[in-house]
Amino acid sequence: MLFNSYIFILLLVITFGLYYIPKLGRFQVLILIIASLVFYSYDQLEFVLLLLFSAGVNILTSYYVVYGNVKRKKALALTGVIVNLCALAFFKYSPLISKTFLDPSDSIGNFLLHIPLPIGISFFTFEGISLLMDVWKEKYVDNKQIVPKSLAKHAQHTLFFISFFPHLIAGPILKAHEFFPQIKEKYFRDIQWEAAFKNLVTGYFLKMVIADNLKDFTHLMAEPYYLSSITLFILVLGYSFQIFADFAGYSLIAIGLAKLFVYNFNINFNFPYISTSFKEFWKRWHISLSTFLMEYLYFSLGGNRKGKVRTYFNLLLTMTLGGLWHGAAWTYALWGFTHGAALAIERYINDNTTLKLNRLGTIIKGIFVFLFVSAAWILFRLTPDGVKLFVYYAWENLTKSLSVLDIHLITFTLMYSLPVILYHAIYLYKDKKYWPQIKRTEYIFYAVMLFLIITNSGTSGSFIYFQF
Image 1: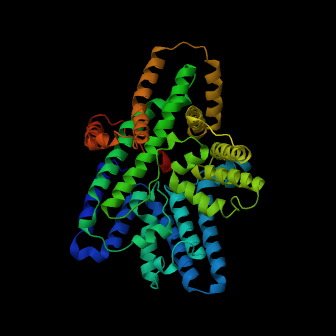
Image 2: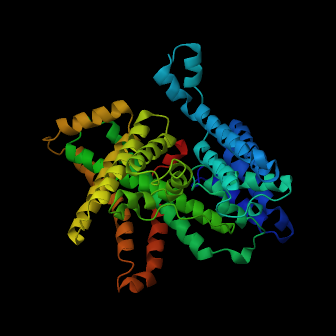
Image 3: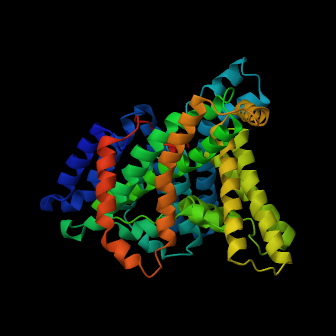
């Protein structure tokens, strides 16, 4: 069910109305669970059982980690993590295993090749792992703040945590220690209307006006035969802005929707394209994933505590696995490895030099980081054969003159990319002396975005991260 569909708006209105009926206050969590299961089952009814199975595993293991035999605490938590990862591996990576290691034409290979991918499995699997790791380590909050003595109450809270519809399909990835303490009765008077409005309008604008229009041009990256190299370069930049608008848009909508029910999600994108280093980029891009990988994988591997060589290896492994999390294809692993290599090389340089860049040098470095990140998105967008074709024709058509089609693609790609550029540029000026004047007129920007959502939305399409 898409956030920009009429059926979702109907579900939201009904859920919102029931949620704030005073006499139903103690049933608020149950109302949101039912709404979330309806939301998830609308497109994939059969996979509701998988979602419930995942929740069940995490409910039981997390509860008995806290209230069971102390000596079995670690074994229980690890068992739960392994079950989560096995379910993810089976549904997400079976086709990749079939194509890589088996004959897709035999019975086993063919079976694995055609296993369907449940929407959102990567997200609710990681959230289940977050719950198990938090109660095992007890690093952030007391376990009693996450796991109540009543198993029934814990079951309800955990199912709500995993299935809450704003984040269920494509995040942000929630952490148990941040979400569970928020679970309590909510009141209409506590809604942060302004914050919800701003997040929703910006999110829908980025998705419906920017991403949905850009996708009608950037899909030609897969058909580079007759396009000039300049056009292909512009399409790569356009896709970079599209994927930001699509995913940041989803995250902002999710944050805004959660605020309507008085729940707070952390920011997931913090103007990533102003980054002047790869480390900074990953502190600004898909923050819920990068912090999850850092806290639950990178630190578990030893982080930077076991020497420089091990640190570089941990960065490479963490980012490669993070790439595979995005999709069951070796291009995703290569994409992750590429970012891991960039982080490792950058860290090596910083470890072995004291060179300080001036303002111009910092700007040039920022441009390089953006171009590198944008070029790496090619691995994200295209199949392995598509990547080969793209690189071949980008070189082959280097001297090709611009056709009418080229000019059309360049013009409209740049036009729909401009708002994302302005979005980042305005942020850069937030500490300048004339920022208060800009702030006072921000209602004009929201009015313009609302107008464009109504009049200039692109053809509706699912969010890019639905496939993960």
